[in-house]
Length: 137
Image 1 (cartoon, rainbow, N blue to C red):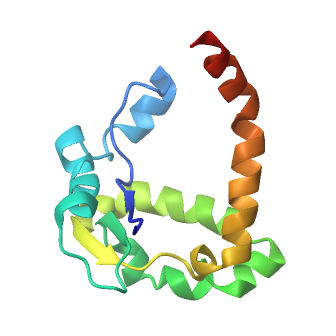
Image 2 (image 1 turned 180 degrees about the vertical axis):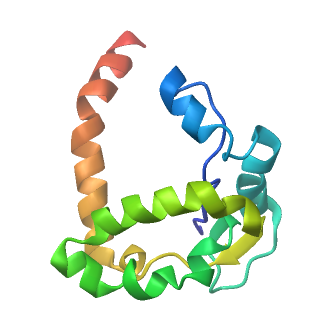
Image 3 (image 1 turned 45 degrees about the horizontal axis):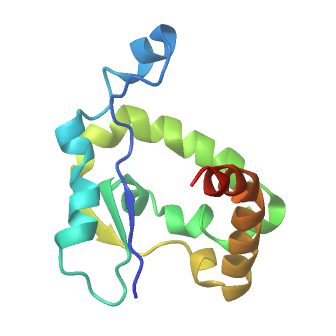
């Protein structure tokens, strides 16, 4: 089985408060635009090196893979700060590169050790919820 990730970028929703909506909604994609990456991931033919579908090509244009997805950002702990900065930049510029863009995920996503650690953490984090809901059945 193959997994493909999709990123809709910033999309208008009703989960933000009124003040945040004033900033986000004028720049965010509407739902029909936002769903295009998920539909692309589900239905477009992808090559072996394509496992990420996004609604904006900004990450490729600014070579995000060189500084955000690289080992330097991970080792120094700057990855989270850089991600937040990129998210703000994306909000204000995503409409300039709208489309269904096929690319590759970060190098860390192919690390089997990190995959296993994420699985273990996810299992532990969701176990209390699972116990409650399984008991109800």
